[in-house]
Image (tube, rainbow, N blue to C red; front, side, top):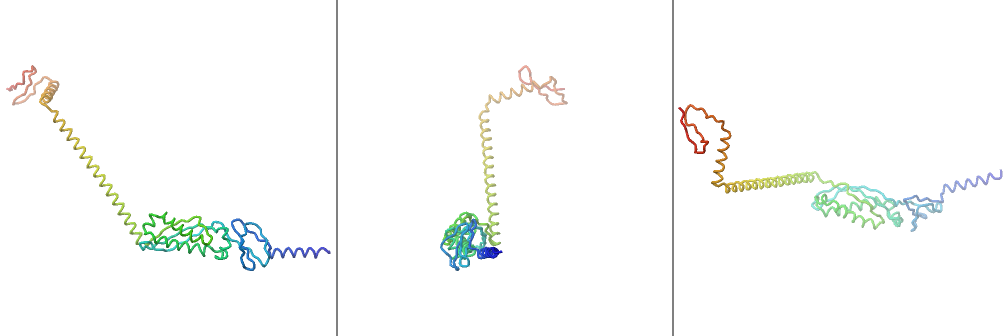
Length: 271
C-alpha cells in the first residue's frame, strides 16, 4: 500500500511529460527550426529526435523535398498580342536556407515567392518575343524563363528543379489568323510542287521529242538509192512467195502480171 503513491506520482510525471512533450521529431525530407519564446535560432535541425525545453521552445518543420507548383497568367507579346501562359514548376528549399525561409517567408515559399516570381519572369520574357516566335522558339522561351526564375528564387534559398510551359493560348482572332496563314502556306507549297512537276514533265517531253527528231534525221541520212532498190527487191520477193499461181479474175481492165523469168512485167488484156 505504501508503493501506491509512488506509482501514482510516476504515472503523473509520465502523463505530464507526454503533455509537455520535451522531444521533437524531424521526419525524412524536412528540416527543423527551433524557436525559443518565438525567436528562431540560426541552427538548422536535421532529421531525427531532438530535445527541447517544454513551453519555452518549439520545433517548426520546413520541407526540403521537391514540391510541385502550377500557375497561369496573362502577358503581352512583343507584337502586343495577349498571351495566356500555363506553366508547371518543381522546386525545393535549399537545406541550409531553412531558417531564412521560415523567418522571411513564413514557411510559405510557394505563395510568397514562387507564384510572383513565375508571373514576373513569364511577363518579362514573353515581351521579348512575338506571338509566332513564342510558338516556333518555345524551347528558347522556356530556357530564358528558367534563367530569370533561378536568379530570383536563389536569393530566397529556393532551387528550380524542373520548369515546363504547359501551353500558350492566344486570342481567337490571332488563332484564326495563324490558321489562315498556315493554310495559305500549305497551298503555296502545293502550287510550287505542282509547278515543279509540270516543268519536269515538260522537259521530259522536250527531251523525248528531241530524241525522236534526231533518230528520224539519222534514219533519213541512212536512206540511199541502193537501200531503196534493196527494199523494192525484198517487197517483190515477198509478193512472189505469197502468189498461188492463179491470175485474178476481173470483168475488165488491165491485169498486172509479174514476169517470173525476170524480163520485167507485162500487161495482158482479157477478152
